[in-house]
Image (cartoon, rainbow, N blue to C red; front, side, top):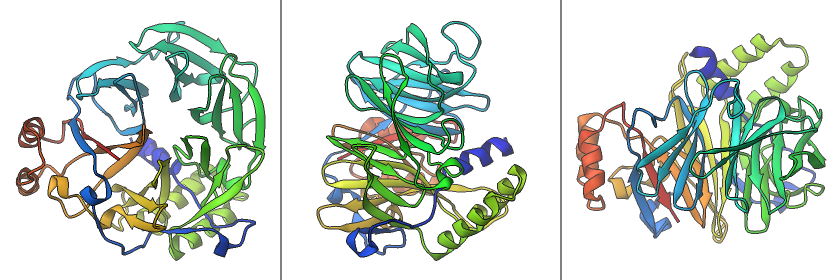
Length: 395
């Protein structure tokens, strides 16, 4: 369990500020902002959905991403031994799981990611050894595809009817390449883009690509967000500042990459993260007004992991940044957004998972909110650590 938890942290970590453009030309998104806001004043449409707690549909160690299509919600879910995909309807009712661990024609031994092919209305599972498996929206197996190209896609996004964009771990083949255009018929590489930093092969966020309208953004391993609508041209759009300690920690990591063993790097990551010297970028999403950056940090300086998920909200219109720690979660009568993971975006709405603190005092506080449906009230009253989280949808 320790090794799996440490791996989950490491794949999220990201780093240093560097760009060819002058910093003064690019908005800087500050993690340490003191700007305060009220959730319901930032977002006028907020929906709270309890996800059904079903033995076949329990969320495990970590949820990686949310995809929404045809009134169905799909979640990439990390269990103790493997990943699966859980499907819920728009009311939160559990429908089915795609859990196919094995060696059969419709099975996988490893699952790194999935996405929805919106033209063909299929789920595409990105599995081991450059194999892709198509399932329909009811979870029925359709076909398995073997690619001729060799790459390791940590995230894939649907771009159009013929092309997907992949974030490749550039420390594997093809070395030095971190963005790929992929043919949606063959899943072979059509176009490549050279990585700007060797760090993207070592410190990789889970969902660094955001597709909104015709703009594609990419959170690079330099803490720079680029417009990569054409992957042959990277245009710096934003810089993210995680603070002095984070920058110093990244320099330490860079210095140790070439002459440290994997175990030594693991130990270094653990030490820097648990001591709150290092934060980890997790997800990137955009709609017409806001840019959302999900990140993780250790909640208190300690020897062990106690991870807290937070987010930065950048208002593109007002050029103002909010940290979720300073956003009053008024719809649940809470002083801030707490431990919340932003994992998806669909039709202008952001999708997040929120697990309440189940102590009686906190439950009583939430129940005093005037914004709760009877269903949510029942969920809070009966809630415990075994429950699936709340789905928060807001735009």
